[in-house]
Image 1 (cartoon, rainbow, N blue to C red):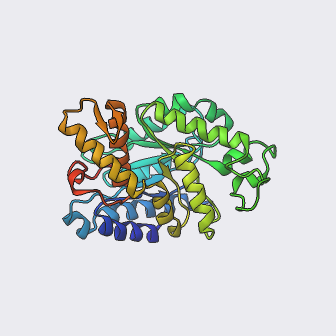
Image 2: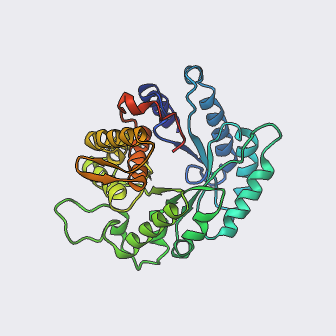
Image 3: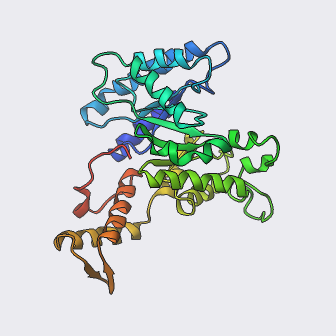
Length: 321
C-alpha cells in the first residue's frame, strides 16, 4: 500500500493530475485476527496521503479509497467505525466487496453515513461495489442504479469459484498468444457474459465499470492484451492492478491514440465555433451525438495522462473520473 501511494504521488507530479486510484485494503490485506490493526493502518495511510505538502501546494487532490469487509462479515462494523470515523475527510470513496443486492448497498450506506463525524465531510462518501457472484450479476442493473454507487467492479476469482468447479480455473487467467483453445477470462462464455452485463449496467446509469485484475503481473504482453480487450471490446473505463508495475501498461491501453485525440480536438473546436450546430468535417457530417463522443475521447485522454492540444486543454480541469 505504501509503494502504491508513493507511485501515485510521483505520477501526480509527472502528469499534474491523479491518473489512478489507490484502494487501501482492509479485507484481503488483513490477517485473521488482525482486522482492527489493519483498519487503523488504513486510517493512518489515508490521512497522511492527503497531507502531502507538495501536492497541497499544487491543489492536486489524491484519490485514495478503502476496501472494507463485506456487509455480512463480522469485521464490517468495526471497519466502518475505525476507517470512516478516522479518515472520512481523507477518503474519496469506500469499496464494498461481495455485494449481492441493493439491500447490501443500502446497509453499507446507512452504516457509513452513521459513522461520519460532524465536520468531517460536506458530501456523502461514494461507494464502489464489487460484484462477485452469478446472483449479483443478475442484479447488476439495480445495483448500478443506486444513487450512492459510483463504480462497479467485477470480482473474477470469487465469481469463478462461486460456480463450484463448473468453470475451470483457466478462466481466472489469460491464455498465451499462441493458444486458441483455453477458456480464459476473455473466452469463457459465463465470464464474458458477466463482464458485459456489468459494463452495460454501468453505462446505463452513468457509473464507472472497473475491470478485474490480471494475476500474471510479470507478463506484460498478457496484461496489455487484457487491458485493451477490457477497454475496446467490453466497454470498461477503469481496470484494477495488483502490482505497481501494471499501472503504466493499463493506463496506456486505456488511453486514446494520438490520432484519436487530434481528431477529437479538431471536431470539438469546430463544433464550438458553430455553437454546437451540425458541421461537416473532412467530408463527414457530425452533430451533437458525435460531439459528445469526441468530447468523451478528450476526457479519457485527460484522465489517463495524455497531453492534450492547448486549444482544448483549457476545458479539462482535474476530475475524479
